Image (cartoon, rainbow, N blue to C red; front, side):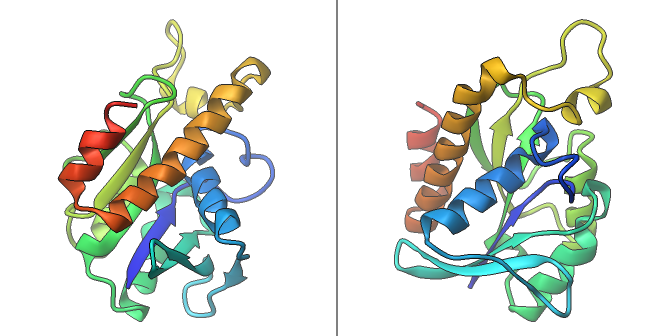
Length: 188
């Protein structure tokens, strides 16, 4: 079993923000599979069990704020007996140009409090990451303010493409090894 986690903040206020692009991709994975979420009683996260590439996986959309993601991810991984190396976290990434998708295993958190919380709950940084590029804030804008702003209307077509590419990247991670998936995704 693998666990896919869509990082984001709960509620309509944050639904269309840059910080929620991971949750948007998780929603699209669930929708593509024709499934819906239900609440996991032990963790409180929204989850869906879907088939991707012939494999059954759990997709989670935590219902806590970004800096507390580990509070639900750790219990989900434990409940489903998912090893940290089989956790795939979908998250926004300031250090990647807007619209690009990058894959990696492990590494630092780069100031991302959601990743820091997940690493703490799993006891390791060695999990897979689908890094969804949102780019750097303009001028001297505070990165915290930037990630909590909605995407501008002019960027919506690019956001839709980013979500589609994120779902396709998840499919590749589940059907091939990391290096092969990287070789494909990093050329998009």
